[in-house]
Image (cartoon, rainbow over all chains, first blue to last red; front, side, top):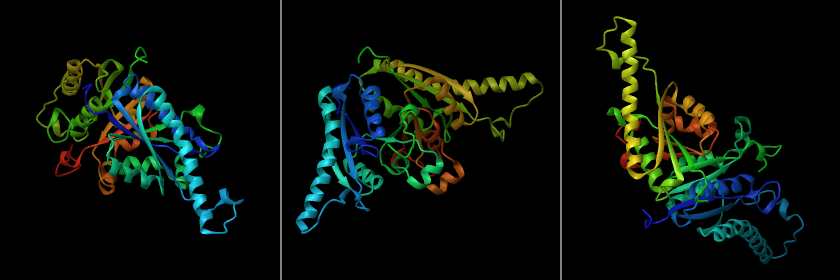
Amino acid sequence: MAGAAPTRVLMGVNESTINGYPHASISSRKAFEWTLDKIVRSNTSGFKLFFLHVQVPDEDGFDDMDSIYASPEDFKSLKRRDQARGAHLLEFFVERCHAIGVACEAWIKRGDPKEVICHEVKRLQPDLLVVGCRGLGPFQRVFVGTVSEFCVKHAECPVITIKRSAEETPQDPVDD
Amino acid sequence: MAGAAPTRVLMGVNESTINGYPHASISSRKAFEWTLDKIVRSNTSGFKLFFLHVQVPDEDGFDDMDSIYASPEDFKSLKRRDQARGAHLLEFFVERCHAIGVACEAWIKRGDPKEVICHEVKRLQPDLLVVGCRGLGPFQRVFVGTVSEFCVKHAECPVITIKRSAEETPQDPVDD
């Protein structure tokens, strides 16, 4: 078994709704630390982690209120800045893996997170998908939707969902 | 990390709807073998497995059509027989764990599987709950209900759901 190919674990990670980029959300960090602590443990060569960050196209444009768009080039720089913010988010996870000696890869996609995650599962065929979740009640779920519920139903690999603990949950549980 | 307490994994296991006791269902066997192969791997001392089999009280009594109940004692023997069948189911999992050197415990409860599993999570506080599932479509789910969906929402620990693959799924996907 020691010589077998490592277990390939895909993790969907996103930015904090409270602190913004490059800070990872509470549920992403929780899911990541839990996976290292409870699954990988000391068997660092037995696992390879894949970090996928899905950027949601910014519909209301609040982030870009101070920007002036005078040419098509300006929009390109905007896109580059988004990419950079996503990269800084991924840096946290990749650095932590390198420090403890777990192989990893990380990349950014744009779109609807739940659809993109399931599409990437189909493409990458990992052994396991890890998704953190906020643990919202039924009333909050109606308005927010949950990525984890969708992935459990539709992803073509085993899925682990990890809720935040009560003490990690912000005052407004929709925050993360 | 090597000296840390093992990761405690609770698995809900049930009998095959096709072959009956003591045969484990397709989804239970799949979830078990997957967990050994992809999570435990060679790190056999890093994990302890807990097998919970929940017996559903037999409402229609088909299994007992040939039995004659002449005294309260007869009902006791019925209960003992049920227990024995459940024990033989658990034997499969426990023997497999012993053969590869993974610590384990197994026990039987009666009741509604989804409620009992979540109750046992509260009591045992495992690090992880593993549930196999049939991967039913929305139409089938309405009539059958799914234990895995309930556990993902309500169990107070991370939950991994493992679907059967297409080639493991019987002609009637409600069978298991």
